[in-house]
Amino acid sequence: MPTPRDPATLVAAARLYYVEGRSQAEVASLLRTSRSNVSRMLTEAQKQGIVEIRVNDPAGRVNELEDELRDLFGLREVRVAHARTGAGLRIEDQVGAQASRLLLDHLKDSMTVALSWGTALQSMVYATTTDQTYHDLTLCQLVGGLSSVRNEISGQALVRELAVRLGADYRFLHAPAALESSAAREALMAEPSIADSVAEAARADLALVGIGTPTHGSSEAVLLSLGLSQKEQAAFWAAGPVGDVGARYYTASGQPIHGAVEDRVLAVTLSDLLAIPHVVGVASGRAKTPGVLGALRGRVVDSLVCDESLARSVLSAAHTDGSFQPTPAQPVPTQPVPTQPAQPANERTS
Image (cartoon, rainbow, N blue to C red):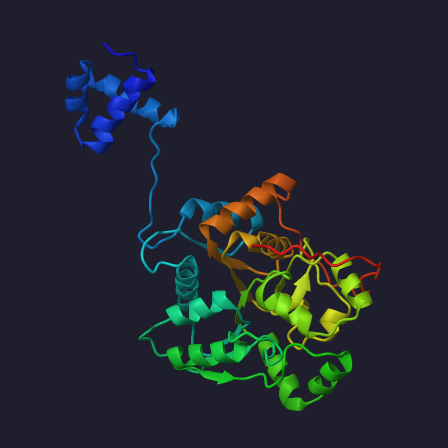
């Protein structure tokens, strides 16, 4: 009789049963052992890691990672896209498809839905199709346009495209997101049409936001377009920015970064965002780990849609630094961040 714990025997039993599809009785006959012993061998093969059983959700989700993220950070909903390979299967598109499903699950008549910008939300918008008719559904922008940033994925384009796909009304925020002075921002906010658009976004029932990295993509481009002085740049980087939503930058604990950058961006504030009943963060790629982790710690988002690689990276980082519980929501500080001189971080994420 073969030894039940012998690795070679366990491999033989596992191949016969799982690969060749033979019954336990057939495996027992071929290995000259009992059927009950085959059952124990198959169990032992799993314990030793010889056999790994993975359940692939046909919806393309990784449920165990969703459960872990939800429990660890107290999230309302989590959708983790399984990284499937194949021609034309981009992970951004898979994340976008999951975000679209979550959006459609929560859409109701008479809702106001606000969007930020970015490639993640673009993928979500392009994945959205529905035959359902919605009444009094309105889409709006959380942040101004990208006229000063070379990036075609603007909030206006996404709002208009999604409104067409849903048969909804939409309202533009007719102002740039990034300005070169706080006075320019204040002048624009004094215009009733602009102030009303920002206020409507702050009253949204549901918001979908991309999560950015200050050293990458449109988030970096916004910073470069502000015309910050060396002193202002030093103060900003000294505050420890790790991510942003809608060009509102925050620290590793999810607290807003005050100062010149905040004063030159035309968008809802982080405190406005916290007041929206349901905020969904959408992101893909391991480079977004610090930004996503900061957003989760500060409860900037209530739900998360991401890819499998990013989910594992966020969980690993959270366990490594001991952040097993989310940071409780706190009032937004009224004092600006001290402006000690520091050199900006030059290393880019990949």
